[in-house]
Image (cartoon, rainbow, N blue to C red; front, side):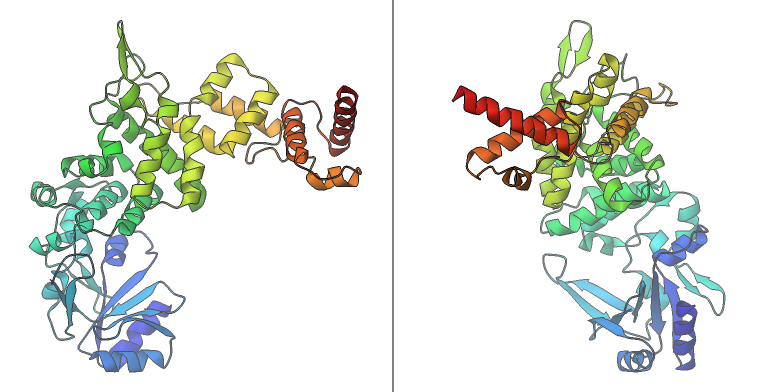
Length: 450
């Protein structure tokens, strides 16, 4: 209702408001937009601010060029504007707001044709000066104009758009992207595009393929190294590690759980899970093997995530999933002990995350059918029985318990607590009461020995 209310207010004031950008694209696809961009013609910026601030609290992004947000709502309001590159970096633009410019001229600053459309709700009129509607239905990604080259980040935006809308890039757009480099591109801008690839991509492999076509894999060497890295056809009939990773990401995308934090951690772990293969792949008689690639994948995983400015918390959550992504299958084959499962939970933090990564890995091998993953189901059932499916085992005995037993704190406290926790993981006790009894016997034994 708020969008219609704003549009009515603007029309009554003599303005000509139209919806622009992604919300128009999404409506054409029959999707409910998550946010709305409104472009207002025929009203000067002072008048625009005056009439809207009477009803809404506004966050001013750029007063001089007429960009404002409705506070607390996903609604941006702006005047049509021209943007001209004035130097290096994403902020080096001269912006000229002009409420009386034409819709085609205003749309020229957009990145891709699918984002260059405008829609007048009142007149029920679609303005599509660059053929975005046809490109959308033809699943084609095409740049609007040569101004595209003024912001190299648009290459990565192309990556996530290809993944989200299953688009194939027009050859002219690929050629233009290949002429661009991320030089002078602020690193902190990279993460959001990779995040959208993983959280919104329907077929992330199409985004990865676009990155390869555009020549931008070279700027992410950990991913680039996967391209052409061979795999044994018996186990990986789908092709090299890059192709396998794309299939794994597609499998992951089909089973996202809707929790952005969890999906992002698992998504990045799936992306990075075989980063160790290029350094470990060998030809062994008639087979190709990558022994130890899980552990060797840790350093390139950290390097890649740091390069795209992932948070420390995210990196620390992803690394153990990469390191142990083969454990569900290994544990299923050997039917390991409860102690081994508890220790695995301690290492990875959440076994349910690890199973999601391993499942995507297993399903990323077409034409091998992806019907079931009994290894993951078995491990999850065992983890639930041990109450460690979504957390590491919590230590039952804490330092305060030792003090309550009358033990005096000292340097030896830490070692005793570590031994106690190891005993808990081994299944020597499963309650606080039994844990304290274990400590009592341990302390008495130490005294006898000493």
